[in-house]
Image (cartoon, rainbow, N blue to C red; front, side):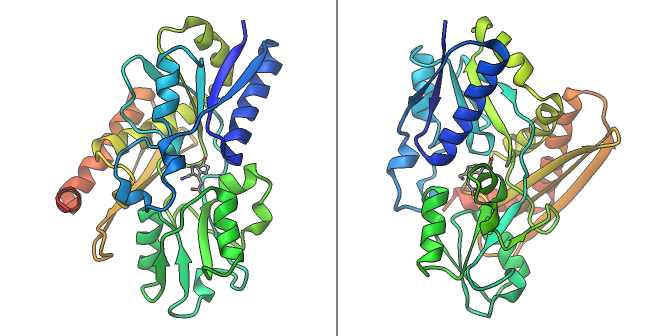
Length: 308
Ligand SMILES: NCc1[nH]cc(CCC(=O)O)c1CC(=O)O
């Protein structure tokens, strides 16, 4: 019996679906079919993501197809997947993390530091915007939507002096040479789960769970659990400037997270580290970090944003 993978039609989504399709085929020798699905996020192209509001814009139609039994699994950039999943579905496997960092692209300038005052930077991510404003309060940040190739085209047409993209997406598409600078995770805290692929399936599908077992990376699963539990506790979607990054090094689990306001006045950042014991600890650590940020002013930021 073949495995049907639901995927968006963008180049990056197709690369990711093909990557998992090849893994499944190589490991299990089963036939894999890609089923291309258009999501509402793909249709609404002219509105900044933060203004559309609804979570899971890029996954809902794919999840509906899975619940109807039209596809068996969905391959997602885990950073696009809401923390609250529909009843009956779950993230069953998470791949080894691709580079989690953000990249700076420009045809004229080498890095953010080199931009002249008043230069125009393209990004629709409130997370990127708030961190750029913190480093450089003299730049103009304009919305930039579209698939990775569209965003690069808009840069190269001269609509922006620079743009910021996930390095993971560039690497997957073989476009890493387009990056002129790569921010460290300390300079620019990545999006929750940037760089992970998450594979979603029906929780009662035992055949698929067996197939996905060797594809899961346990360290990734722990890191993603910590970051997603941080996000869930903050009830944050893409309407809130926030980010988190978890690492495991020498048996220690480290997590750093931030939340900022939309005006660029308040920026609250905190880190936690402890000896790693189990997966429940990762969940608890993400929650604890989020609660610290909520107490330190995060709650006020969220109240303001949700009352807009
Ligand atoms: N928001 C769209 C999106 N979703 C996942 C990636 C990149 C790949 C990844 O983070 O795993 C991108 C492009 C980008 O942010 O530049």
